Structure formats: C-alpha cells, structure tokens
Length: 199
Length: 199
Image 1 (cartoon, rainbow over the protein chains, first blue to last red):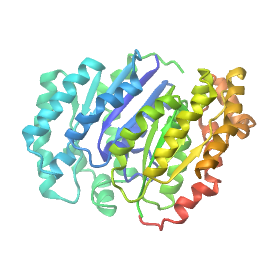
Image 2 (image 1 turned 180 degrees about the vertical axis):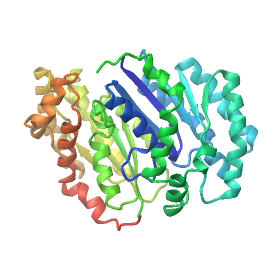
Image 3 (image 1 turned 45 degrees about the vertical axis):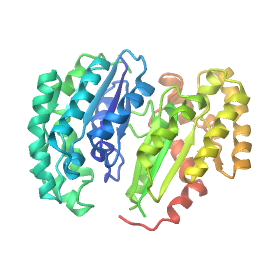
C-alpha cells in the first residue's frame, strides 16, 4: 500500500551540507522507492530547529500533508540545537514528550536520536547526555528509538566531512553513514516488510 | 553568499513518482550544490494542492524556514490540481495573485507554470488554457514565469513515464526533462550568477 511519511527535525533531517540534496532522509527513502515501494516523502527538517520549534509547527504541517491518508507515518529527529542553545534538559524532554504523545495518536511514529556536533565538544557532550533520556522517554511511550550519536562520533566520514565544511554538516559520506544506520534498523525495515510492493 | 530557497506547490514540486526522491526540484538544486553553491533547499510541494491550499499555508511555512535570512528566495509552481478539480479560472488567478503579491514583498520570487496531466485530456486542456493567464499575471506583477506545459506535452519521457505509472506522475526521465527546462532558464541561472561561490 502506498505510504506517506513526514520527517520532522533540524538541519540534519533537511540534509544541509549534502551537495546531492538527498541527506539521510532522501537516501533511505530512495532505497525503498528504487525497491518498488510507492512512497511519498515530505522532508520537514529546518535549520536551527530545537524541540520547541518542532513542537510549534509539526501538527499543522503534518495535517496539511497527511490528512486522512490510511498509511501515514511520522519520523522525528532533533536535539542537537537544544544542546547547542543550552536548553535545559527537562525542557527538551518535556517538548519531546508532548510531540511524541500527540504523534502516537496521529500515526505510527519513529524517533531517531540526535547526531553529533563535530566542532563543539561542550555542546556535543550535552547532546550525548540528552540521548539516554530521549531513549528512556521513547521506551516509556512505546516508540522505537534509534541511537546514532555514538556511532556517528566514530564515523570518520561524518566527523571529517563536517569539520571540512561548516563544522556541523557532513556531505555525502556522512549522510550515507547515517542512512545505513537507519536502513539497518529493524523498526524502519518493518514499515516496508508489512507493506506489499505496490508500484 | 549562502542561499535558502522554499519551493511551494503540488505533487510535481514534491517529485512524486521519482524513485530517486529528487524530482525536478532536487535535480536543479543538486546541480547548483555540486557546482559549489551553498544552497539550502526546502521542498514544500504537497500532493493534491491547489492554488487555494498553497495560499493557505505558504506564509507560515516560509516564515518558519526563511525568517530573516538575507538571501532567501521563493519558487512557486501549481495549477494542475486547480484544473483537475475544475476550479474556476478567475478563482485560481485570484489565489495566484494574492500569493505572488505577498511573495514579492517577502523575497525574490520565480513562478514555473503547471505541468501537463498525462491521462486526462479534459483536465489537461484546462491546464493549457490557464497557462497564458498565469503568464500574463506574472508579467503584470514583474515576476518571471517559465512556461513548461507545451514542452512537457511533447516530452516522450514525461508523458510515457506518467502513463506507465499512475497517469499523472513521471519518473526519472520526466523529472529530468523538467529540470533541464529550469536549468536552461536565464531567470533561474541569474540567481546563481549573482551569488559568488561560497562553499
């Protein structure tokens, strides 16, 4: 059955820095599209967005795009800008909880943890300390959560490309590394295994 | 200087039907990104959107994304759904005028005419008859307008891929054909000639 997915988040969701204009979102969806799935992608990542910004806009933007579609889905990924702006952890988690509780009532939902900030160790330590709390929150809500921070910290493609560009945003190699983490995630795969090929 | 562009419109703007998840928007932006321009792309095409739907949402979505960025840009392309839903021409043009007048006050703006509807000649005749009125409206407002309908009607890639898929949406060949029309358009090229390479 045809599927429509809204991806909400920050510049990493948008794919900023990727000259091919795909980012990890375009890559994981193209993999499914090229495999024969009838998939409509709405990339709603915005540069600089924190959890507060996503909370403020996601419902209106999702309703405009997904309306009553029978196979609508949501994916969220944010947190790096909360850390960079030193938003108190309890506030970030409150915003995240409010987003995810409403999301669950709207459509099947996945959460992907924040990516690292390559050029700012103090902020990146805050990202790292936010991640387990996001994971616990998702667990308590019954939403699958994919941790990517530690693995991308160890990805030379992500870290070196980000440092070679603007300090934050990787290029093709880094986004491909993150796409691979998502493609290998059973909770992402399950969306497509349960959906017969329809193209 | 870094540039941020919001593309507003319908499923053709979204790139529906392209298994590579780029559409014409992704292709024309990737060409610039791969050429060294620091370009952020926000694809805000929504399946089924008419001029009324774009009018209702574009300001909020553009403000969330472009805020006070010094080099923000807007591109609009819609009309096929107005024709398919038999929206009276005067209504479509009124919506379009309201969108474009506000857009001009917000950022440099381009308009790309509607693409053909491959599997419905009655609706497609309405698209064809809407196009010169959209062109006149843009001319009167001082907004550059790119007509693509007649040329895509003659594009075997566009028409054959659309008919082979769902009747409306082409695949890689059709979107590449439309991307080429945009890339060859001096008004699109001018945005990048006046912007020094900054990556």
